[in-house]
Length: 435
Ligand code: PLP
Image (cartoon, rainbow, N blue to C red; front, top):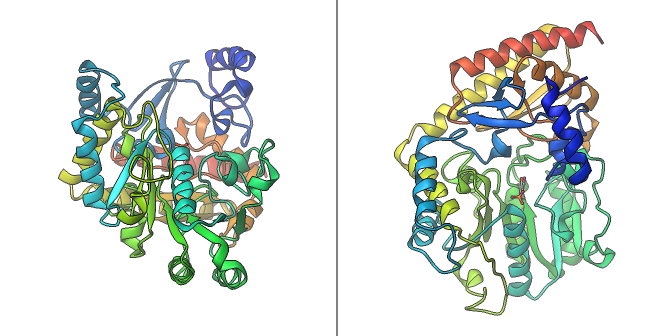
């Protein structure tokens, strides 16, 4: 049987499928895109995870990017433990929420005000409601293959698990809701211009992953984000950067700082929760001031700004602040990994591209550049599945889908890099031999 090594994962998966739909609490975990039985994780430390059968793996998923510092980082654990001992939730304001909001705002100058929520889905959903409230318009523009969580209006040509499972358009989304979402191809500047000429006055907002990381890794081409900024400004629509993945991942100033394009609103998640359920949306003061209780756009949450999650997030951002070399080390690692993988495929004569932006990368089994969702889906997914399983069997845990990114963490070092590249060289020859 492919996938999990040992009987316990299989036994748990069989039990799970009886009480949890598909056996998992988020679709991409089910290995549907690569086949086989998912690995049930028992523990994680730094760059490594251990499964319920006692196998250890170098983990390049890191909870889909939530863990910038690796699993069970001592400082994050200490902060969360200390917070939990003071009480796990109050449903009343706390000092640490102010500290976290101030810190995020100091790193991202365009985020003048922000609100904390519990998931990336909630962050983007709320940002869009706010954009509609601010502009008095309905239409939302998104790009095929970008994933913005599972709010109804975003399950149209969505990337990540929605695409990997072969259900780019979910059942249960009312057609009138989907009709308010306009989908354009990523990196297609011309179609953005045409859309705005045709109906710019109806657009409330354009939502985009400034570096796309949910259809594999696809960087923005020069001019694409600039056009989004120009056209939204010209037509009075808001530009929303979904930096749930890229925020504090590609660098301290986010993709917006590295690329020098400043959105009206920014959505954050993953890294800022230090591995706990926490996300945020924020931006221009005049827009954010429309939120209840100041203004008419309602948004709320019992566990929003949860003190344990906030303490963990603050601990991560303190490390980011104290260690100015962190992102250049991470980028060095990502670059060495990308180069080593490319060399492994080249040596074995397998057409593959490793696309990278800063600290994020992904492998596409194709000889052509991948600029958008259509290109990403045209890459050889069957080959990715075989590569994934060949790596898993060698103790390397890659994303169980070709449409996701690889997430190096600060806990990955030379040892993990070497083990991964050694496995990749062997896996590449194995693929070649059996093709
Ligand atoms: N936006 C982006 C860019 C994401 O990658 C994700 C999740 O992967 C989300 C939003 C949704 O976040 P969550 O899974 O926390 O709801």
